Image (tube, rainbow, N blue to C red):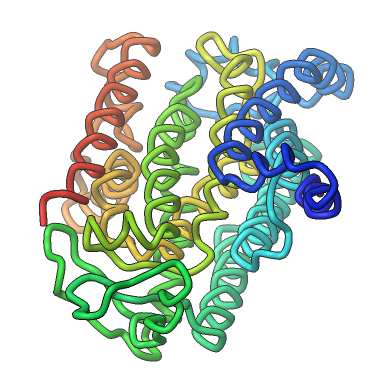
Length: 383
């Protein structure tokens, strides 16, 4: 909304030009989201406690050891979503279709998580929405996104290697739909796989897979929010680079017209997560619930698609991949062999069963996430 005010006042006040810079608005978006979370956090948590929104604990031996967390309020993701959405509305360019798409997707997936959390609290158990219904709703949202992007095209261009000099006014002449459904491969600058209509099911796989993987990771205080934070840093940098024709040309990656504005949304995401971690870090005062984890995971997948760096998500989000694979392998092993591979899945609970403290597991996962973030960004130059 402030972007509209900036445009209105620009002709009269030249100093307002500073707000035309994405980096400036991204910085303010990050700070705004943090402040909103911290300012309203304590009152929000007290309200959840008054409403008896305590986290339902599963009925098994392991989770009985964690009964102290039973009274910790859940659905804290509402606070995070509130701060991110408000911050984006204030500082983002609402003319940009990618920003609007991110906001709609974020809220839609959060709504699915809200229904799940609400049913868990209403019936005082850990079941919530059935797995099939939750998966159907996620697939429906992801299909809508895939169909929209497939029909409207991602305006992308491979600007490097051109014989003509690219200027600010002429770069749009190089935009093409050739790369709308293309899959880029990390470490290779001229390798593209055109998915065609398979782009739609691919979008569903990435968004739904990422959403559920983060949901599985959300089992310890600050584990999911912290690891998503570092993955978000990766895609914040990517969004800015892909939206800048000069930098993208230098690094020889696809230029995506308009994607630079996603940087403001990503910055708001980082700020919202940091503000939420203020209360969610060990020992947690509040849990994010499915309303937060499903939305965060789905947005990470969407950002990978919009920046055309989907495969890179396997590297930057390797923690989530491992968490999801540990559950899949555990289920398959038990059904086929009658034996379990891990003491408990997802794998962070396996480490708990081995005797590692919760705080040590969380910090070590964060350290690994930082390493993955740095390695992912290094692939931009290693081509």
